[in-house]
Image 1: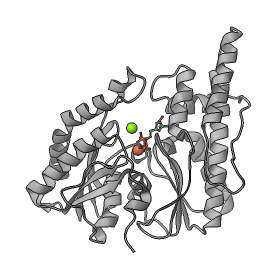
Image 2: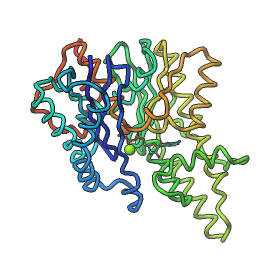
Image 3: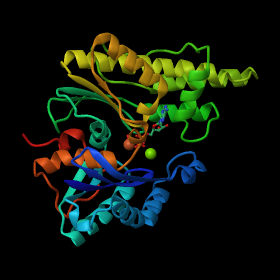
Image 4: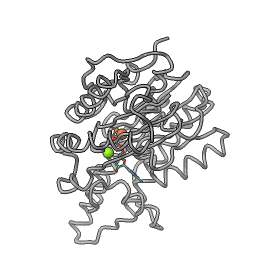
Length: 338
Ligand code: ATP
Ligand code: MG
Ligand code: FE
């Protein structure tokens, strides 16, 4: 089975061809970060326009580089949601056109299921599994009883982790997207600013990042008012330690409570060095098998969409040519039918 997958939910235009939901023949990613940097964040209209400019070329290039004849493709998969509606629509229109022209089935795919299934690009997933999803727009603990079944058991009540990283980075004077800068500064610092841990109610798997973000902004403003130099490293490290401690504790507790055979880390923030190290150490100590995708499959890419789409393909759960962008699509909605 060869699935050609398209991803345009945010600011990466990506096309991949994946064999059997696992082997990546080609994964092309055109990032718009340089364009959006000037605005300090993603501008939806600009994102849509850039997707339009490169999607056709990427699809042609992907097929050419794979060495396959177009007719050898089994299906066309595309991110249906969640994401920016205008950006999603560009990928969906292109995927529909290709599916129609080649007379191949279309598979509308969930972006976060894609982040989770990025883990299958390296190894089979063991169920039941718990996924810790940490990205620019999502922070969730997802329970998976079996392949393609998702239940969100906890999520952020305000900012997503990646979003908090980017805001903190901005206040520390780092360019957009600031997550990786804060990560590097944190790992290079010997001292850590004292910042709160937000646990919420006992037993809750939810998260709240806005209080921590405000605490960072207060520290920065206090230094400014006193005319002191901001201790970037100490603040970055204090912030990272707080975020990582809570994420790791809740994910590990969920893995125990739901009897997970595997814990899956995923999303753009899975690239975070502090989080990878802490989670790896805790899982080793507690005997929980942990999977983390290679760096290139952590941030947005189409290979992960091809991996998730394969789950639907094997069950014959295909889409029609009438799908439109679903900016608020839930994981439960995309789960396979029983
Ligand atoms: P979503 O998947 O929720 O729709 P998204 O696709 O925009 O959101 P991703 O591409 O998965 O998000 O991740 C991007 C986010 O990851 C950004 O907020 C970025 O700052 C953050 N990020 C990337 N690398 C790191 C890192 N090393 N440390 C912390 N954050 C990071
Ligand atoms: Mg992105
Ligand atoms: Fe994403």
